Length: 365
Image 1 (spheres, rainbow, N blue to C red):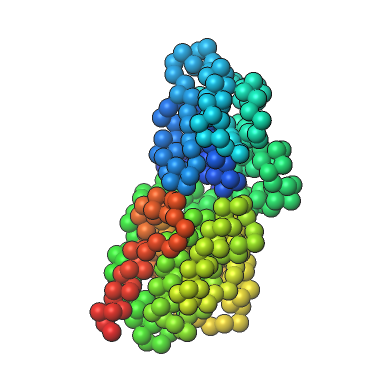
Image 2 (image 1 turned 90 degrees about the vertical axis):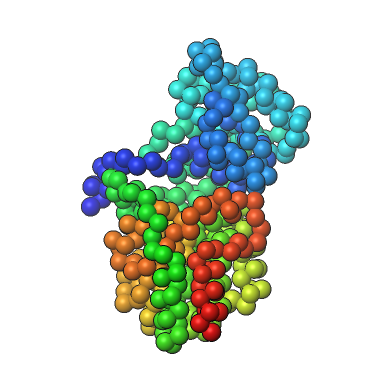
């Protein structure tokens, strides 16, 4: 099995290592990132990161730069960025173009002589797993003293676990996965409401990745609002672990859930979603549940812990629908365009599934 997974050829698009590096730089508190490459590289995600207060600039390498290099342009832009934004922490990220032509990011940073820490991330989009971009970024942060060795090793273990989850049960588990919309939210919510009104007992699990939890947690809140004491709520909202922004997000979301009266047990931090299944298995070991609602990254939870339950899974990945069905999740819905909606926010955002469940509950009240 491990051999088959390792040799699997994926022919649908997968997340980019460069983009993963950019989001990690944001989580570390970097204020300005310079992409050393063509102006269109990572355009969409660069724009989204501006919503979180990160200035993303580009050296706009063109045909001449591909031939003659762009180190001088990078040095000039480093200096100009310092003048414009006066950041305390900056970063330079490679791209496919700059890495192919062998640009020396470190020399450009030395030449700029900014007097502030500048993380140098030698990354491109040619890695099989996008988590490689995260590891390269964390290595740069460790080398500059932004994080310590213990946090680096912790993050590396989590990334290895996340990669394995995706290869075994996620969007990297099949040669080609067509994007799907999943079940109609009305139908899934109606079935869930039926179980609740029949007095069934359930699990209400938030196992979300970083800022996406701002919307997935709304589903957790909605289920609690409707089911009350019929559900036990678990959430990966430990704000004592993770990179700076990850801890802040966990604290914000936990605050909002508590304000809504949601009592929950912790199953890890927002970066610990790939290993949260271990905590879930321990917490429900001797309990008996009829159903489970899992919001965020449902495929990271082991089916052995969910045996006998009717499972309602809410994901934001259209290519995740088929793998979840194959695992045995009976109801799978997709919160489309969730990630852009959760950029730059600091409080819960209403979800489509949560809104549907609340509306059905009112109409049948």
